[in-house]
Image (cartoon, rainbow, N blue to C red; front, side, top):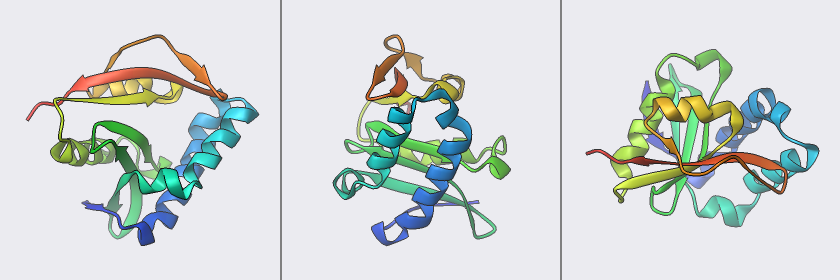
Length: 146
């Protein structure tokens, strides 16, 4: 597997993967308002310009995407295609962002679907589940170990 930092010119297939995986695994837990809010965010050039996006490739095929903002201090997007889940790709993507993180801790607002994934990566809940603009999430944080 190859993990690489994507250029903005490479975002289109990455965001298509994000949207496809979101619809399959996360959208069922959201209201229509939340689904539309998520779609707006991944199509907002201002929002996307604040992200550092990484892609994980298996035999030249994009298998997963992770994106951070705030200089690596917050995970903004984290999606692995169904075909490639449970093969360590998510862990490798996560390790790539850890290596670039400038802080001693990292945060995420986890969707209901991903809470257990983040727990396995060492994140702990910092508050109860929230709902903002139809987006359900649990605020979490993890210590960055170097």
